Structure formats: C-alpha cells, structure tokens
Amino acid sequence: MRKNIFKHFRIVAVVAIIILPLIACGGGAGGDSSDIPVRVRAYDNSQPQRRSIARSGMGLMRSSGFSEYDAFYTWLENNLEPPQQITPTKFVLSGNFAFVDSEGYFERPSFNHFDIDFSKPGGYTVDIGDIPTDITCSAIAFTLNPYGGAIEFAWPGGQAAFDKSWNRDKPCTVGGIVTLMIGDLDPYAARWFADFFALNISRSSPPDNITQPLRTIAYGAGTDRRYSNDYEIYSWELAGLGSNPGHFVMLEGPYVFIPLTPVTIPSSASSVTIHVSWDLNGIISYYKDNVEGHDSVQYFDGLNFQKYVGDIVVLKNGWWGGLEISITVQ
Image (cartoon, helix red, strand yellow):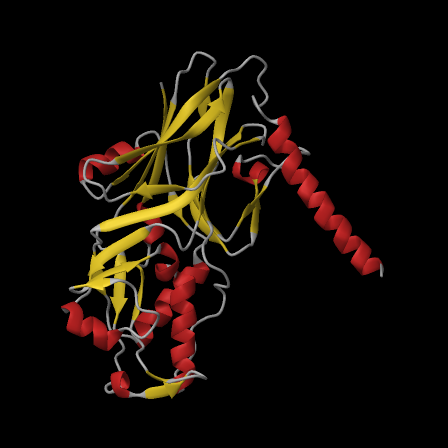
C-alpha cells in the first residue's frame, strides 16, 4: 500500500514540476522582456565552407561516452560484410525545439512538431514560434519524432536487390528509391533486428545496452559529445548547472549531447536563428549479411513464413560527429 501511495505521489510531483516552469518562466530570469520570433535554419554541412561556418565559435569539441554505440557497431563489423555508404537525396526530421536559459528555466517557442529538412539545396528555414528577450540561451533540446519526417535514398543494386534484401514492413519504393524515417535507421532499430536474426541462425547476439530509440538531440554546456541511454534528462543539466536550482523540466531520453556556446538574447533583439546542420555524406551504412544462402532461408513469425535476411541499414558509425549548431541574434 505504501508503495502505491509513494508511486502516485511521485507522478503528481513530476507533473507539477514540469507544468510550473512552463507557466512561471515566460521571460526567464530577466525583468522587462518582449517576445521575438525564432526560426530554425537547417542544411547539409558536408561542404567544407559550410562546415567551417557551422563550427565557428564552438571551441574545442571531443567525442566521448559512446560506448553503447561503439559496442554495437563493432558487432556489425565483426558479423556482417564491410558497409556500403549511402548519401540520401532527402533527409527530413520531425521534432520540437525548446530553449533552456542560464538559470535552468525552460522556454518552448511552440508545442508543435516541425519538419526540419537538412537536405534541401541552399538550406531550409522554418519559423517555430516566439521566445522572450533578456535571457541567455545555454541549451537547446531538439526532441525527435522517430517516425516522422522522411529519408529517401537509392537502394544499392536497385529494385531487384531491394526485393531480395529487405524483409521488414516494406517502405515506399519507386524504382529502388526507398523511403524510411529516422526511427528505422536508429541504432536501436538496427540492434533489434540484428538480435532477432541472430536468434534464427544461432549467431552471437549483438550487445543489448541500447534499449530505446533516440529521442533527443541535446545541445548544451560542455565540450564533450556523448550518448546517454537514460530515459530522461533535466533542463538544469543541459544548462551546465552543478545542482538542481529547484525548477526544471524533464526531457525525454535517450539522447545525444552536442556542445553549444551560450548566447545572450538582449532586450533589443528582433529575432533569433538556430543554425542546425548535419554531414549527410555517406550518413547511411548498408551492412550485407555475409553468410551464403541466408536470403533463401525461411522462418515462421507466428502467422506466416518469412524469408530470412540479415542485411542491416543504419546511421553510419560516428554519425554524431557531423551534428553542428550555432545561434545568431538579429
């Protein structure tokens, strides 16, 4: 009985903690402020000049803390053929953006999800709502919809090779052009299918330490890129505060953390632009099953016999290194 009461109290407390900052933080810690529009500009930073722009002002950045991903990609390399790298012709993610100020207060320009197109030639810009001025933006959370947006690419070998190689729910294909979503290419999805196929052929299973799809790309205080399999992250942690200031918002994990240089938004500002970019060159890896004859093996899924295919498509190893962000104030 005490357990149930305690559990109920925790739920009520967490809901209260999440709602109160949303009501109380309009205007952040500052006094007089006005709301100004926020837009997101997205682009592919694989071109050298764009990459230098994306990294300007970012300071020293290192990659660490990706042991869960490292273990899975090592398993892929040891059990499947060397990957073919694929550059998508379309790369659109769907999600919601939120700001965290220097005191850990939370500012969400809108509760809507927006399509963010990293592949559009010349870049893609979308208005996402308003935020108050007279604050310092210390962190930004891009919460993803794993099964929103669209990623398109030509399947290696064309339509015939696709029909032989793919045995999941079929994505849209027209002449070998495949449409997936970021949740289909997430290492979690790839690990799940790799584990399922391994059981059917008595192959060693992949590591099981990636337990949920990626939910948030977190840009915040620090110098190290890292991955966390935690199911939650708090706004004050993103802002780099050493302890809980007593107000915070709990965001969804797992997450990848990318360093961000804080930016002050003065009361004289008229708008803010978030520049997010990703290196899309070869961002998708296609790992082909290296065991002869597996494309003709069948298994029973409980309803029907299905052909066994161990081929895996997944974001390439080290994909997190191509994510960049900067903020400009107009």
